Image (tube, rainbow, N blue to C red; front, side, top):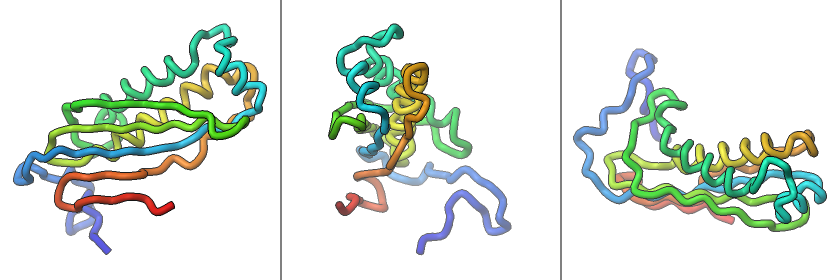
Length: 158
């Protein structure tokens, strides 16, 4: 197993020095979902909530969050992202699926940016819909795929 790179030999926290790494194209894709009452999903799909188009606001929140990941997560490198995409689907009557892809030409990966985009998009859905469904649950936030850099390619097995 790899050693934890964010700790020095004495157990102190450290930001990993990536200055000697090559700049390569990095991509990460993450997913998650929000479980809710079917009536809540219908309100979202039909854009019937007073706060507006829930999914477009959640998309914007996810993109903005990815751009600010290093402000939220200690020791995370600040990256100039080439692109962030957030998409939604309706796998059944009680869930909204969220997929986020982050891409950068950088010395370190963009996994945290993709995961942050998913989580903040999910939190935004919750915030905009909590008046009608406080029982919503954010579920299964996970890295699906990444490439670029020394650690190579990763894809979650189904």
